[in-house]
Length: 436
Ligand SMILES: Cc1ncc(COP(=O)(O)O)c(C=O)c1O
Image (cartoon, rainbow, N blue to C red; front, side, top):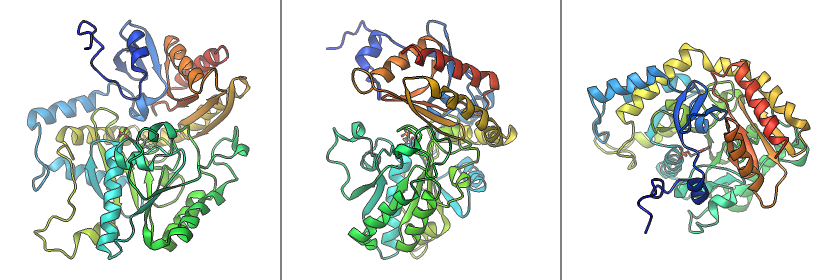
């Protein structure tokens, strides 16, 4: 029986060392701009936009007011066979922001749901095209595509998969794109484009007629910012085109300015067939995800059957929740009004200068970065992840929050960051990592 007198006992926290956390809680109770306040009142600079969510900084009144207004006007409306105006407005606004003919938006509540939705759209699309034998999916080692069964199956990070052997069948993984000569390379490495040939090898092994889609994060984020080698994404695109495979960019981290453009598809000038997004879509203020789908896929799934027939048997009770739509619309207003994607492009060189300025710290074995996204690896300590966890705790004590995956620290400041914030991130990292 849990100790009911213990106020933290009952919440089983996600991706957390629960027992240690509850013995030494790091409770955050306030957020404004770039700064969190802990329950004990100490100031913590947010070096990770929360969890890659709050690109416009915290405490944005415009978003809170929009959500509040929407909830007072109408708290909820069902979205199966009914609708409300703001989801249509949001889809049109996103369509205008998206590259090429990614013209149709399917809404859900998280990145994980966006991935499962994209998997199902890919299967349904091929079936509608009379090509239903395409049931295999290609993903990549070190990928992170969320935690639902689909995303777990696509995932290429051992710890996220090993307890769940009964994941979706038919998923195969290309090699990840990190090579030892990429160490301390800033931006896109010059070598490694040939790793895209792994996709061709699966085509040669299984036959193109079995493969539905290839899922990649344009920059592999959670594993520690693996920037695609020059020419790699272009090569994936070519192979997909030749083999009739859909190319899905998972932009749950990369989307909304992180790479200095609206989407990484723009930054790398490669056009995917679907883009999954979440996180910064509402600036982290409401749970929301979406899948953007190219015109041809949507057309294949929505024409042919009688107009009264439901075209896609998929959706969530909270798909396009009115409060989430209001939050997303207010967020897009801020991104446009403050020109935050261009601001990210301007800030990125100085941000990366500071991150690569940490190269001399002995415990750092590699640094990678692109846009407003960077990561460094620490030499492992007593056990894998132990040094990273110690650094996480010490940095929080010293007033800096970043994202950790094992011994890899990931830095992704909000796009509203000032130079002084970037200085503070660098100073705090230097001080703590030099002593860890
Ligand atoms: C690339 C990518 N895809 C999917 C997800 C899952 O998103 P969520 O945690 O909102 O389900 C994440 C989360 O970090 C992600 O980074």
